Image (cartoon, rainbow, N blue to C red; front, side):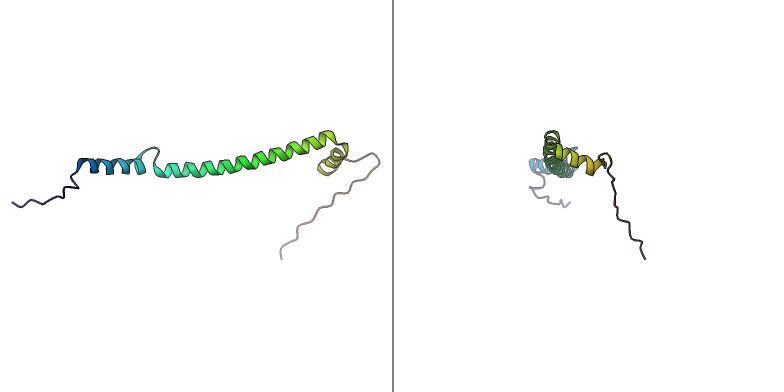
Length: 102
């Protein structure tokens, strides 16, 4: 009988074990490579959102300080945002109409 010669490198226990281990960690484990990649992308997105909200918080705090300390700014804010008016004063609100499509 003729036996097929199997290369010694293929029958090496450590090499086969390492290949199985690496493939398991890359594709089948709960923390596989694809999951880690998606988590990294999500983390980057959340960090960008965090920077945006921190910047926005600073802007709002500055506006709040201005509103709290300056009565002219407070009056302008009330007139623009809430359409408040002084007694015996008329307020006209102008809006643009949407053009109809032809």
